[in-house]
Length: 467
Image (cartoon, rainbow, N blue to C red; front, side):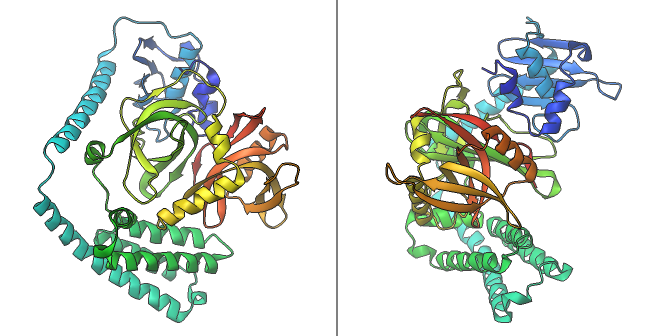
């Protein structure tokens, strides 16, 4: 695995990290280099007196570096893997202590996680105590939702036109509402308030966006008020939307593992406040044909437990969070990158046919109307730059053989630099595109070129953090 420079650079968070890593792939910049079957390590001389200690657990790969960068992986981790793929890191029988301690700590954490999951499965929590804790939290959440309901009513009573989103006092009012929901132990609802302000304040059609979300919020408030009457799957969706997070150990113990070969369709990193970075990776099971969303968070350069290469396949077991249309999942520790690059599976081609793709999206929304972010894959996509409207995707749906098909125009959420890169990679030809659909916008994450009748090769993937 990771036998080529292209595969290593596929882990790069942005173009600047790629360029910086290329400048460090000289053994002369590394006073210490070594590797074995489990890890590769090295010390890279930086601007300070003490070299940076860089190490990579090859089972992930997972990275750790003593440099202050908050990017994951940092340029030193990328450069270290580049040196390894070039055959410039010699095998060593002895690991440095700092490498062994890190690998041991990762193994210990994995074992503790497994032990905790086993303990949860063997001795489930006291249902009476759990019910009391949940009732106490719901009383706080209900108070916060009541304030949100009054705030929404005032907004509609005054008219959406009164929402001067570029005004500092309006921004502060939205921030205060989000903070109140955090205090009320409804962080999921608080995040929705913050995200809606950020989206609406950047859109020319903000009244329509605002009204659409307020309607969805009212549906969520009504569902929360009638939670005793909801089916279990819908209640799980409501609680998830409000921010009731299930313990990962409990999920591993109670949710059945779904073993499959998972193709990584695309991913993005979203930079938030306080140096918090959210990473979303979308996977497709080649046998089960299930869509999975792996959602991780990193703060202050801590990094993630593992890296996922867009376009590659992993043999893994995923545990899905419960709900009406479950997509979010966590991966068990025993996941491994398959050596074969290969073409995309027939599952991707089947899911990206326009009629099937839109139908799947509608079914997922019907199963869970509180999940606004949806994966969307479409074949026959042409990139087009419209004057005054930015980048658009012109999608041709050849519904019947021998017909020209119907054209659909979708507005893209794609920076200029990324759009030009995709256009160059496609050569102007139609592609199979994958991305996130939200608020009538499509954020492209990857593009694939069709090969023959039953294959597709990755030609482009979104890089860097999305602001």
